[in-house]
Length: 369
Image (tube, rainbow, N blue to C red; front, side, top):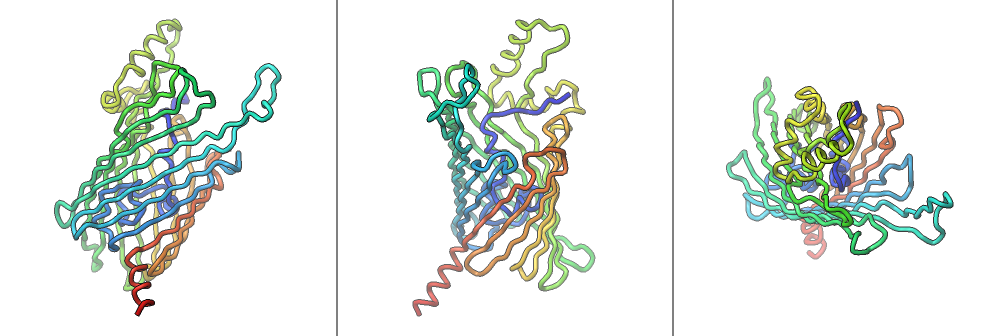
């Protein structure tokens, strides 16, 4: 039985950057970089650089349309040696949509809308020890997918928070000192979102992400990172109509078991409300795994896999990516190969351009001298 967990503003769940996207959408425990805001903001105090900025662009669902895209900008600044502040801005455009006349069966000439969603957030993270850090973030979400602004229709707005933790240490494997990372991020803990015209509000994509990372150095120049993430949507499953259940009874049950549930109660309910019990709860966990090969911390090759149960969305795909980094900037790209039939994510590209502000400062300082 096809029974995915549904939410509003699903664009908030799209991985924005090419590094994580090239590794199968992992990032909760990978080494800290400028794009950690989406994956785990608690990683920022472990960044090597003092500050950085990155811009990412993803043409979305290119097999279906050519004007849907996601743009994302992230930035961070380390305060001293133990804490950091960070922020990001996400903009998701659904392209141009023509309004449809059901009577004539054709688009209405000159009547188009440009729906979009955006979110802006900021976070603070701090090292509580040499190996452990925590971070908290706040987010404002805006979703404009309507076309008629009346008392019954309006853009949706929501506020959310993130709670993140990160452990980073070293361990000996044979004669190699390997880096190990463990990350946890619970994001989009917040209000429901409503577009007007209905007394019921929808859940936003609250998500629990748990990740592991192992970095193995082979010599001074070559190293390999292996990472895996598990994701669980902390949103109640929409009730299914039971056999023989009257429509009025079903509607009342949906109201009681879904729409009347608060966001916090929904998080708790999401662990035990699947119709087929514990087996289906396990099927709601998405798994990602990836690897990154690095040469001299300058050139990178990446590969990964993302898997989801067939009855929960069936998003299964292989990813590949590459990147290079100089003292001032870095450039990364990633590509998706779908492994499930007719998957609209097939052939999705991601691009990320990053800037190391320390490197820029040193470069311009040398030029002035």
